[in-house]
Image 1 (cartoon, rainbow, N blue to C red):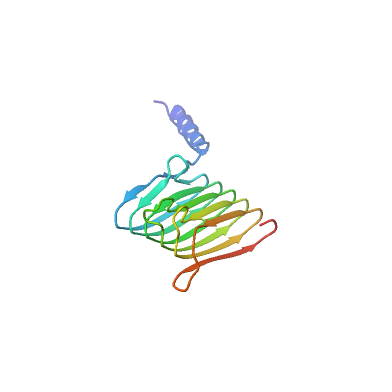
Image 2: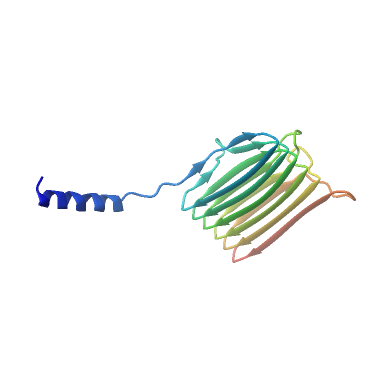
Length: 177
């Protein structure tokens, strides 16, 4: 082949690669077992960790998660069916959607939940349900939300008594939070 054709072809390929977008990461998990220790990091826009139709579902006695998403328009949709859940969620970016359900049945009940959530960015929608239809007895949620126009909805079936604790701490800053 002639050198001019190869040079033009190489230039064409380089230019075409500049127009190819970066695709998001999609993670779907269905796990069953006694203990889970999971760490997930997703960088970039439009990443998915479960959806309403293909969720992350974890069934087992003990689950520990560390989830980090950096970027805009990311999704986390997770269901925990177990006795104990410990987690750290860090989401940085705008227009993120988080749905977290810990036990929607009498089995497992998420009797002990300790989750720390840090949101940095605007227009994030966060829905947390703990012990729906099954009372959670030891719940400690700390949510720190920084940014504008964020929505936080926390629903808990919990009890407060001498031997049980249900605590929600919400720290927020920014206009319109």
